[in-house]
Length: 130
Image (cartoon, rainbow, N blue to C red):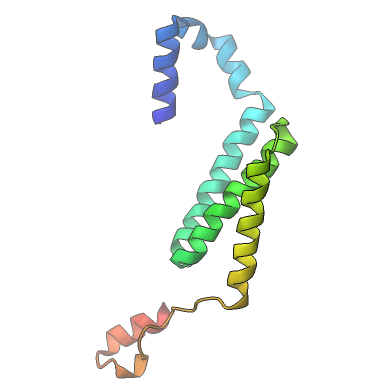
């Protein structure tokens, strides 16, 4: 929603608000295949992000964020022809090495304490479900 407001303000500052809200220009924006792809891609990103937030620990969330940047760089090169510079390649290599290093001995912090020590049956049931 913020981007819509910012774009409307930007068009108003340029004096192109009426041409930007013209029916023909809106149809061009809505029915362009690349725009629909961007909308569907962002919807998929939102669904995947909600999965990450609910099922991964903080280390894996960091790796997921780094991988998102990696895939964004590669896909922008493939789809839009945006060049990938040496700093991006070095970043991709560092992230790949970090993921490989983490996969050698991953952290498992699902159980910080023993379930047998819990006296409350409702709490024990809740912890076993998690």
